[in-house]
Length: 239
Image (cartoon, rainbow, N blue to C red; front, top):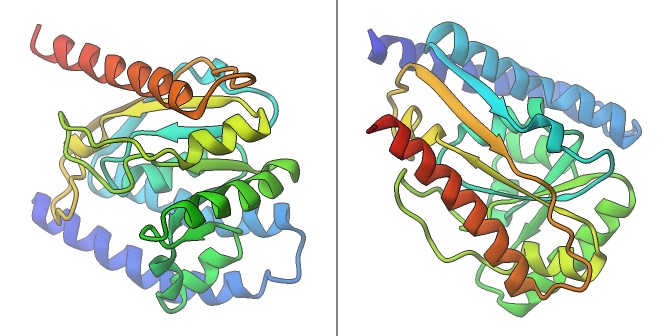
């Protein structure tokens, strides 16, 4: 049954791209807020379909920590789920992502309308400079910037070295960092066709004041909070 439900979800998800992406392209002349509001409803629909078809729900802890103004989010990356669900959880935002995503016909073209910071991950310092320059513009326009510092999806219980780009952006602009932990990888794993039913936990940490802090310190504080949260959940599951 899980296989059937997962297959049906995948079919609907990619079929809906063929319908929604061309419609999204028609919003190009609209102001960003209107354009964003229309396009992200595709993501909302996917989250709803996951709930109905695959029985994947979620709860959010710490929503009161979301600041009133724009911020840089440093989040754990375990699944495709968070890239969809964060559209329901956070204010209007864009992402730091690999530029190859922009090359996907229709999907990538619609994604481009949300002003992502599309980088060449092998470009080193030039990529960080791009994150800072474009990120500063996005934040100044009131658009949050979503960063997955590990750079790729990682399995639950594992971690990768955090990239410094998001922390540099926060340090140089003074905008707060919001750390986010979740366990979506337990239910929708990386490169996994099968979606497993359950309730994903999302925890939003207190904003980190980045003024006067070095990027390394910002990363260290944010990562420590995220990993501590994940460790607490793991202990609860085995307690």
